[in-house]
Image (cartoon, rainbow over all chains, first blue to last red; front, side, top):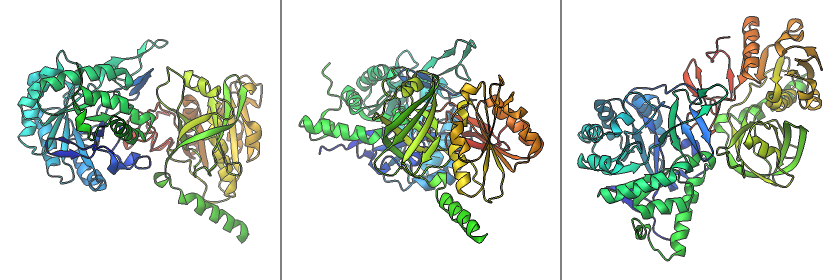
Length: 303
Length: 280
């Protein structure tokens, strides 16, 4: 049994497997399938200062190896979260991390400050990369200035571990990563979904209500892996890798490319117990290769 | 008849124990015990396992993993057609409409099917034996009504089925429905029952019902909802919005309701028409 413990800033993870925001609910939805406390971290649904209804249906289109979605940050807002959700999840014995989104730097900062006060939430993941909202979201994440402005505002009011989730829909993700590192981000996670589209040829209409959406699932894994590798070389802060991870092999690829931890997203929809299988698979690989700790493989790519 | 009343009461208690929100969900590798092609488009798949199947409610569904179909990424949500407790069998009635469901239609006896179940809420079960419940189904949408009919019967009430299809050929499992209640049918081409749509059937003029539960194509359900609203009958519909997780996590299958966007996979699939914003 190898040691799977990793650290992101002050945040200690019992293993490098986390769940990606928007794919694992608040964890509770999956409690029948996996022991939640055995997951390294659970990143819950995107939360905003004010409630959001999200985009109209249809919000999802299936592709051969992934899905497109345009959910658009549907959530009941931070007040509802604090009052109704937090009491249900605060005692789950793992890192419960809230994904935060907003439409202005002040929005983000106010929402983050509210979460700063919650003892049971040791970190936030700042979503500056949602491709499905008109205002905010990805608009901030595609320029260094935009990304920096949100992180600066949040950093001033949030004192725990701050992870910033980056968009792949940019020319140079490394530059954005460096910009948020310079503003005090403790970690970056990548990638959010890749902008895509699907068409119903009989109706000559897009399959998604807002025409475009974000692609996730195995289809994006090679792109994500390349970006994680590039960003890990460009910044000193820990990198969290995600994008199409379905198996322990996928996860180990990201770890070798330089990710300190990984997130599993869309794969939860196909196998609700996949997180624990990936954790066990990483452990088995380490054992069979004589590694005593997962640290021995992080960033060890021979390239 | 106190004996009968007691029986209904016991059945009601038994079913109430399993509130959908408190029902444990499972990922199970079930084995195909029988597969019957009803005709080229529909197949009845019967699944079993050695251990007793978990409790399931009428109206709930199963997320079925489709193996060996390169274009099928997600599981397929399929309503529970029937649970044969004595044979420990779960029945799924599948319309082969895309690559994924066509792959399911080609399963063989002995094959393994990975299922997440039971998901979603349930149809509203009767609370009195004299309650008259009309179950209206169209096409493959008749599927969940069979198990619902059986449960209504077990609680001492008698369901009435009104089933519609394009043609006699597309009326599914009629003999099974007849085991649990009266069956009326309509076909668009007059090859069986009355000609036309379910909402044209004379039954609706001749009899009063306390509740209507319906499942089928959306235009049919909307017509049923319109009838129910005009006749002031409580009506619930079973929706089949496109779904990814089936667990309330992805927020893809939402339906607009009086309470905002709700997930059909967890708040539904059965929703009372009073909650919907349909312009019937």
